[in-house]
Image (cartoon, chains in turn blue, cyan):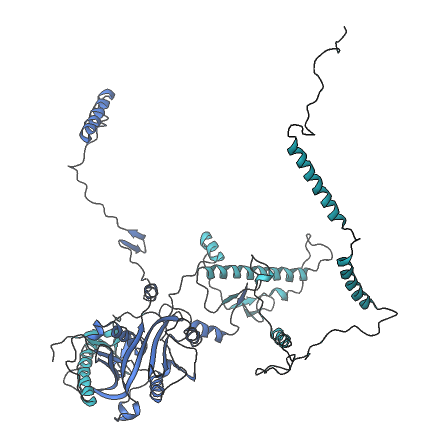
Amino acid sequence: MQIRAPKTKRAKRELDKRAPKLVENVKKTLILHGTKTSAVLNSVLTELYHLKRDNAVKFSKKNENIKPFESGGETSLEFFSHKTDCSLFAFGSHSKKRPNNLVLGRTYDHHIYDLVEVGVENFKSIESFEYDKKLAPKIGSKPLFAFIGEEFESVDELKHLKVVLLDFFRGEVVENLNLTGVDRVFVCTALSSKTILLMHCALRLKKSGTSIPRMELVEVGPSMDLVVRRHRLPSESLLKEAMKTPDHAKKIKNVTSDVIKGKTGRIYIPDQKVGDMPLSNNIKGLKRERREAKQNKESKKRKTESE
Amino acid sequence: MEGSSYQIDLGNLMAYDPNHHFQSIPSSRGELANHCLEKGTEMVQAIANSLFSLPSTESRDGPVVKLPLPTTKLPREKHLPKPKPPTKWEEFAKMKGIKKRKKNKRVWDEQTSSWKRTHGYDRANDDRDIPILDAKSTDEVGVDPFAKRSAEKKERVKKQEKNRLENLKKAAKAGALPSHIQLAATALPITGTKKDVPKKASKDELESVAGMAATSTASGGKFDKKLPGEKPPKHSGKHRKFLPVVEGKGIGSKEKQQTEKILNQLLSKSSHEILDVNKAVTMFNVKKEKQRKKDKDANPGKSGKLKPNKKSFKKTSTKKKP
């Protein structure tokens, strides 16, 4: 066996960035398309790339052998995901049977985790919206989400689509948020049990009487209807593994550490019930014969009772 | 419209309205968009209400709030990092109670009377910089002590590399190999022979094989369609090997070999006088065995070998005379 280690510190840093960690990096998206695409689909993919500029990779070549829902057709996707370190992907293809097809998928450990296939209808690109350019949301800002419709809870496909969309557009998970930096919102309305309307709007904060500003939505970005065609949920075992959270250090009760005494613990003993305790018959004060006689009597008594 | 309450996940800045459904979808696109925007505005306002009421700290870019943890659980991207098993040294140190000591980057070097770095180029107390070594009584005559020292150092380095490899193998077995290191197999596995290791065909091998296969065509591979990047065959066309015309005096050794081979094959097939001694002996033995068996079956009692000894054990004439 031979050890292969990177020769430069830079290469080592790059490899360490891609290593599995407790607190993970932002999920990167891979945007690619298959053999045939339509004009609509091309603009959908480019606009998706613009929305996620900082952490997305867009491939421009067509990929013939990628068929995400078939068992053999996902090896290329997994290879690309491994090479670019992307755990989300958007694969667009166009055919007569499935026009304007977009497959949104997630990977776990660079293997396919789950997939949702949607058809894009009534697409309106960013250029078709007119708005004050000063309101344009900045790249990389954390978006707000508004999901409207009971179908997001009742229908399996839409429930899955909801989590996938959340994962796609969420961005970095931060603890501290700068309130002046909230400037975009994704509004998803369920139109039927299979269709949703996705809108991207900029936020305008207006002065109101209280410290909480009044929100105003201005539609800026792409708006499209997504029709769920197929979806594949993750297998039980994979789901369980992916949802594992790192163990928090277990708190041990009744143990404290003191500088002087060191590690001290408290033991709690229940109260002794003196009245109920049975007296032993091994009374050392009595002479031997009497003592033994008492012991035998007691044991005989217990035997007959048990019988 | 304060009636409906939304499910708000502040960690993800998400609001969900579970009570909304379209009785009838508005006919025009614009109306639908407006309806959605209205509902959206309400929900965003609700998020903003809870967001702006969080305790905020002032920073130079604006008010910063601390978000709570997100409630909707999303799957991880990669598996959780597995804990590294302790290395051989770590186990030993734990057992002995040895603790790590912080080393300084610069050490006083006695020889040059200056501060030098502990590790690296031009380091302090370097093994190779010692000019004079005192001879000890244990030293053999004719042994170069400097060479001995450098050989010992090489041995120590090799041992350390071996230990490092063992530690990494142990970590790899536990699934906790450091992300920047890969272990590559260089030797054969324990079981199996050289045949079992699938040999990767080299570029030259593939080129020659393709050419050889082409000669099996009727035209000897001359008119085959060439793939992009394929070079023209080296020995094009079928060919036979012809012996050299002139080779030494009389009949050459190669021609002799050729004729001998052919002659032997011909003679062995058609000759009746040639006796295969081994075959003849075997045939004779087999015949003998068969005959013996036949005799045995015919008279079962009279087996030729095991007959009782006819000598009597009675004491008759051998009387001891006093």
